[in-house]
Structures are given as C-alpha cells and as structure tokens.
Length: 592
Ligand code: ZN
Ligand code: ZN
Image 1: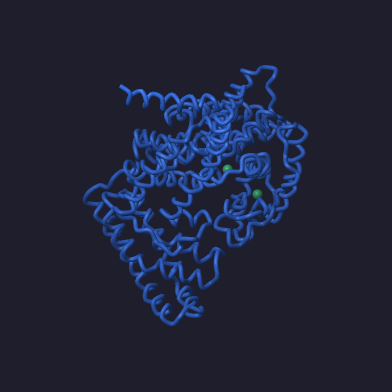
Image 2: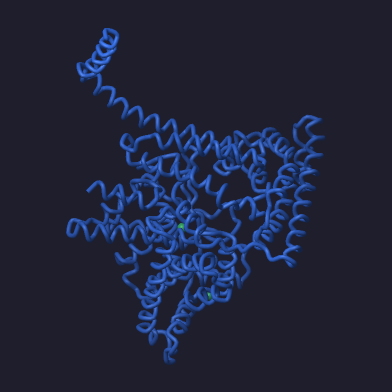
C-alpha cells in the first residue's frame, strides 16, 4: 500500500510541476514551433543531401558534382537502398506536424513526400527499369561532367576515370534488368546510346593524354576508355538483337493503360482532379476554342479573301491562318523584335496593374549562347539552386544556321501575332515573372529542385490568356485567332496523351486530331505522336496547370464578388512559389 502511495505522490508532483510553471510551458511550446520549423529546414536539407548520395547522377543534373566520381549501378542492391531511403524519409516527413509549419514549408513537405512516394512507385509498380532500355545510357552524365565548368581539368578527368571503371558492369546489369521492353523505347535506346559514343571520342583520349594526369592514370584512362566504348557497343548489339526477336514475338505495348496512367498523373501533375476528369475538360475546351476560331474566321473572311468561305468551317480556319502567317518579322530582325517587345509588355502589365514587377530584377534579352543552341527557339535561363547570384536571361536563338525554307517555316509559325504570345509566355508576365516571385517570396531549395511543373507551365499559359482578356493588342481578332490556335495546341496535347495511353488511339487518328482539328503542320504532328509514344503524362502539364489556375480565379471571383481584385489574386497566387495549384488553392481558401 505504502509503496503504491509513494508512486502516486511522485506522479502528482510531476503533473503539479507542469501546472505550476505556466511560463516555462508556454516558452517550450513557442520554442517547439520555431524550433520545429527550423528543424524542418534542416530535415529537408539532410534528405536532399542524402538523395544526392543515393543518386549522384540526379545531383549532377542539378549542378552538384561532389559525388561525380561514382557511377550508380542499377542493380538490386541499389533498389534496396532506394527503398530504405523512401521508408526513412517518409516516416521522418510524416512525423512533422503541418501545424508548426509556415505555408511555404507545408508545400515543401508535400513536395518532398511526393518525391519519395513517387520514387517507390516508379521502382516497384511502374518498373520502367524493366521495359525502358533507354534508361540505360551513360553518355548524358559523362557529357555533363566533361562540358560544365565545375572543377579543374585534373578533377574532371579523375572523375571520368573513376566513373569509367564501372561502365561494363553497368551495362551488364542493364541487360539482366531488361524484360520484355517496348519496341519504341528499344529503338530510342539504340539511337541514344549510339549518340553517346560521340562523348567517348578520340578527342577525349587526346585530352587525357595531354593532361597532367599521372602516367599510370593515363594508361588506365586509355584502357577504360576502350572498355567503355566496347560496353556501349555491345549493349547496342544486344538491343538490336532484342529488336530483331520482336518480329517473332510481339513486344510490350508502349501504352501504359488507365491505372498506371492515373497513378503517374497523380504523382507527376499533382492536380486536384483525375486524368480522366482533365481529359473531359479538355474535350469541352477543344470544342470551345474551335467555335471561337470559326466565329473569328467568319468575321474576318472578306477582309482577306474575295472568294466565298469554304463550307467546311475548319478548312476555312486553316486557310485564314495560313494566309495570316505570311505576316512575320524578317529573319535578321528576329532577336531585335523580341527585345523591343519586352518593354511594351512591362508597360502593359503596369498600366493595367496586373501585378507588381520588380524593377530591380530586369530581364536581359540575349542571343542564345553557342553552347546552348541545340534547337531553335526561346527560353528563360535562371541561376540554378546551387549558383549564387547571376542574371536571368531570355535566350532567343537567331535564325543564322537555318536554310531559307526552314527559316520561312519557322517565321510563319512564330508570325507577327504568335511571337507576341510567345514573349508573354516565356517572359512577361509568364515564366520570368513567376520565377522572380518564386525566388523572392518563397525562396526554397525544395521548390527550385522539385517545383511543380504543371503550376509553372500553367502560369505561363494563363499569362497569355489574362493579357489578351485585359486588352493587350486591342482585342484584334487576328491576335485572338492565333491565341486560340496556340491554346488549342495545349488542349490537344492533353487529349492526345490520354487518348494514346488509355484509349488506344492510333497514329492516323492522332495526326487527324493535330492536323485537321488543331491546325498543325504535318511535321509538328508527327513529332508529337512520337513524343507521346515515348513519354507519359508530361504532355498534360501545360493544360492541367492552366485549367486549375483559371478555375481557381473564376471561383474566387464568384466568392468575392465586388471585392475580387485581379492584382491581389495574382500576387497571392504567386507568393507560394512553384507548388501544385491544388495546394495553393487550399492555402488561399484558408486565408479568407
Ligand atoms: Zn514569309
Ligand atoms: Zn513554358
């Protein structure tokens, strides 16, 4: 009895102790909140560093070369390490209470959880390591190590030397992993691995011989260099044999089917709806865009043609687009024209008060540097998460290297009107503006590494719409016609991708959709078909992000009525960084 009494007394004393020190308790809670928020930052940093050790290749693509000397073997042991990483960090993240985190940290946490869940799904359910032979290719990472400026010549060559040691083993493991691959990914793997042989050129060998590597290292370098080339070549022959065997026994389909598609869509897009729901919206939007185009064409027809408008309305739309596309900038003027449009976009955004542009972060328009000129076009380059400072550039590739015919077709595509839409999309208030907000307001390593692509693309597509709605270009019907064509492309990307992977759409049907119903050129359409057979879901990101942002805005308008302010909406939306739209939506709704 007495014994028990003492126990009780101790318990009461402990409880009493807490109750009699309210200040201390409060202080502990406050510290917990602040400390836990700080602890979350440390936790996410530790997780990211561990990820770079798990996958040095992933790190290299993000500009981190610490573990560049280690080639990851795609073997069972690596898959076990990956699963252990997933289990460890999923638990750690789940244990963090959302309540102690700021909005931006909550979205960081969700992004990190999505990364680990999607790694697990990719490995144990999607299993593209079995059916996609193009996953095995050492060329890209070696190419990057050799071409980026990250270390001394000695360090670069040492890393290459060390990595080459495991290349034969790497391809041996690849061969045992591959099980009933698709024809399309096998063909791609052959093509790309042949391309990788260019990285291991005579030039590289000469570079090593002329370097300050030791005599022994030079001997090893030469030997491993030949073994690497041999390993790539024998992987190519293995794939060619696999391809030849497909004549006897049909290969796995490149179509992933409904369940895998929905699962991949939920990881990669993180939308507030299913892929099927998005597809249904896209079908309706396609009809709507076509109707708008027919309406505009009917109004404009007699302005440009003396003949009667064709009965087939879609044929008429195509004829008018072809006719208008002749209005384009001269090829030598391409970069200069883009440069001149930027201040006009800035003025318009300021005049209409669409959002606040930071004048201290000007966008620098430049000709795309030579080493980046893989393909024609325009892009934004921003300093990566591991570069400090640095400018943001709008790279515009001059048409110097194009033949006359190629240049003409390119200029018709980016005609007088489409070029303006492109600048809105890439620069202001599109990608560049979103990037500035994302870096300023919610600077987060997590988001710059794992930001949501659908939100980023969706914002740029939304920017096109809001500028035209607000009267950019004075509601010129020609500009709207080109806008709808541009928008139709984004809508049809979603329809195409879903239809191919889930609804068994064939190539003829795909080309009909893109050429006859979305007014694209045959070449563009064929390339799109090929891209959709090799990738899954990514093509839906533009439309998905756009649709969700647009719907959110309309919902807020309805809820707030007179009190709705477009500028506030834009600024609040952008303030959360590159998080999935559904999460931004949740945060915006909770703050009302
Ligand atoms: Zn022309
Ligand atoms: Zn874009």
